[in-house]
Amino acid sequence: MSFGNLFSTPWGWVILVSLILFNINKYISTPSAIFSLLMTIPSIVIAITLHEFAHAFVADKLGDDLPRKQGRLTLNPLKHLDPIGCVMLLFAGFGWGKPVNTNPYNYKRTISMKKGSALVALAGPVMNFILALIFALIFALLSRLNSQFWNSANGIGITIKSLIRLCYTINVGLGAFNLIPLPPLDGSKILFAILPENAAEWYRMHQDVLYIVFVIFWITPLSSFVMSYIINFAQAPYEALIDLIMHL
Image: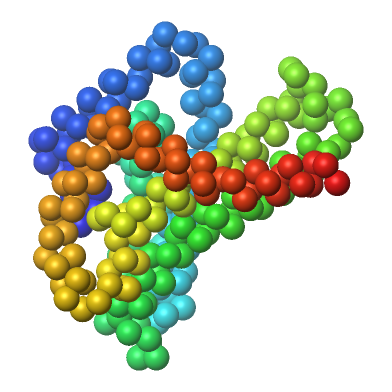
């Protein structure tokens, strides 16, 4: 099951429109928020494109040629971005790319289908954390430069630094979000692979119920409370690294 299936139903569209209307008010009432919104677009494109590419790449390496046949082994964003998912990420705080279709029966016989599926699922968040590390290092190194270009409050340099920091924070957020062990997120596939047989069967049989639990969780204030802790926890090592480099 994917997010796309959710928004193929009338009630799914009600959720979509409600979330957008709830969040869009801040952009109408605060002009500076529109600029901040535009600033996030490059970061979102990079994060989602590389996340989905990583899924396709690992599946291909495990022997599944379906992603290759469907043109997903590319860094072309148009092959990976889902229009509704991008709108949701911009206005509702969570989103998704086009899911990478895989066929576990094609995996090499040196690995079980369950473990192969878990590795493919894990590849997306890992890619986001790697990207976050790269952008955090670039941000820290630029911040060390004693240059007016990079540190002027109204200059191009500070805007570029802001974009780089957004790339870092959005990748951390997307990686952490996808590790939540509820369908249809990547974390659910990882958890399914490590559960004992009986628990895994129960988990598989209740996918639809868990999916609804995720939707209810995300449209309530509880999601903001929980995600703030998860993202802060995930960001802590990166912030420590940035602080270390800036004080060397």
